[in-house]
Image 1 (cartoon, rainbow, N blue to C red):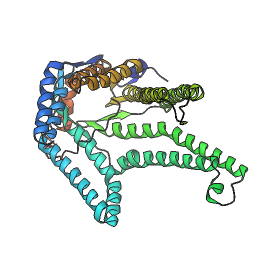
Image 2 (cartoon, rainbow, N blue to C red):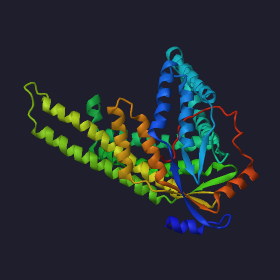
Image 3 (tube, rainbow, N blue to C red):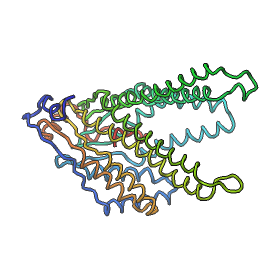
Image 4 (cartoon, one colour):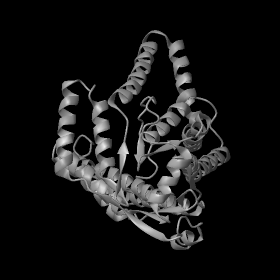
Length: 408
């Protein structure tokens, strides 16, 4: 596989053909953002959450405005009214579901089926809204994917993975338990139980091994359908790096389970029981300590895959077949930031939220670069001339502001 630098050299030249690497500059500060955040929190409380739509706009506008490439910042153009309308639509549908569940099971089922059918459209609208409300050098981003494409990749494929996994678990349970004896029927033959067990494990592993393909399908759909003005983003990556990240995640999960299993087994084998035959206070305390460690291990495993996907996405994406992106996320540093951010928020009773958001945004910026072929200023001017997609467009799009990340 070609290196990033080799890939950049193979791209068509633009403008004067000079390749220049632009760092992402993040100029936000905790002091500035704390004032915005605390006002957002207080007004959201006073208005019973209504102001949260405007709070989200203020947050996004601030972070866009302090993020620079080549001396120019991004901008965010949504209004609180747009986002509030989108949220009211979602809230109204949720209330309808609750009432239908209470008074009409048939209507509830119909509404669930409708929701399942339109999920692709909702996701497409969210991607389109977030893209169109963002601009750089007065040129809007855009998203042109279809609702059917979103439904296939964000709904159907993940659903098939979940169904396959739980089907495998069910078959494995059938193979490991003598259901015949439990129900008073003829016991299941050992040979059949063995076959069921093997089938269940095979289905589970097959379902898990599909996850990297699903991740790549989602990334392809999301990135290939994004536009900067009328210029297309492009993404294609081999499946190998996805499996490397996935296997690292699975390996860490297995390591955590094995380690905790050894500890738990040792506790069960050596801890004295109380006179009632129940575990003693010491055992309960140890299990209380082990649970957070178990959770920590799974979170760390998820972060391993998240970093891998983020680097794959940026390092294999181009704009207009000429401008390349580079991501240099490192799992230990990113995991340290995420975990310590969570701890800071918990122990500060939420007051550290502004600091944690600024800290994470700064790390993202410091580890993201744009490698441009030619002048970005001249390129942007040509985009405006050919597309006419400026910051004055798209003002009537309603605010389905669902956050669907692609690698942060």
